[in-house]
Length: 116
Image (cartoon, rainbow, N blue to C red; front, side, top):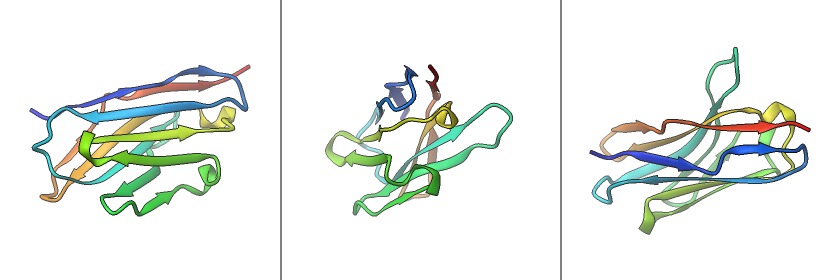
């Protein structure tokens, strides 16, 4: 069974940086799109950034210029480099993948807290 394993969350001061990683546990899952979503308390889960196999990227306006999504197809891994973090970035961040067959998977979530 394919699983998504996330890492890299934590507590950081405003202006700081974090790097999230997410790896799909089995190479047999042909992944088309990898993405990061986030959900803050009392808010709906929303897209942060996504990347296709061809490295086409899409970002939420609130993170453009601060966050960078990248992927390593050979390792079935997606990264989210987050710079100049703000308190409003505080949320649980979820990894998401969608295969060419339409199959979707979610990670368990990792907490990111931006606070002084």
